Length: 151
Image (tube, rainbow, N blue to C red; front, side):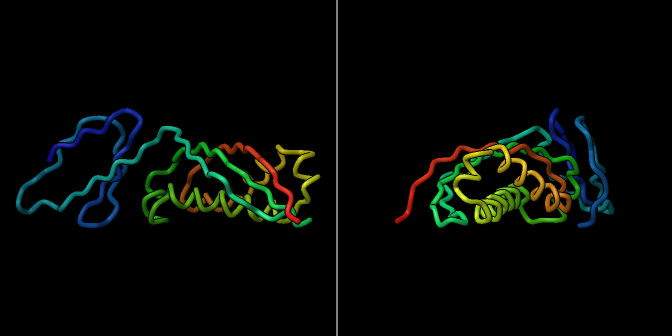
């Protein structure tokens, strides 16, 4: 079996269904004799990526509806953990950021949110960094906020 791992990626190699090793970029030839183990290589992108969480409507502590869009930049630092600790690390980071934003904004008044918008990014970063240690992604977070008063 021949395998090519391009720059910016690594291959997580399993042997007979168990983790064997992480292969850096390069060309590999794995044995394919009848008595050889069964190999499976899963490519993991190590480059920084981004995703957007659009139009999350959240109720603040003073009962004002705030619509928030979040831009997330993230990068995988431990490919083995990213594949073995969660089913889909990209969906998981999306959900973690979404929940962190909801938890933070629900405890703040509109005036507090508008007074220091960077506090939202810092709170999300702190919250998500703690949970992302299990699947080893690190990220940067940015926000766009628009508000609507509820009556």
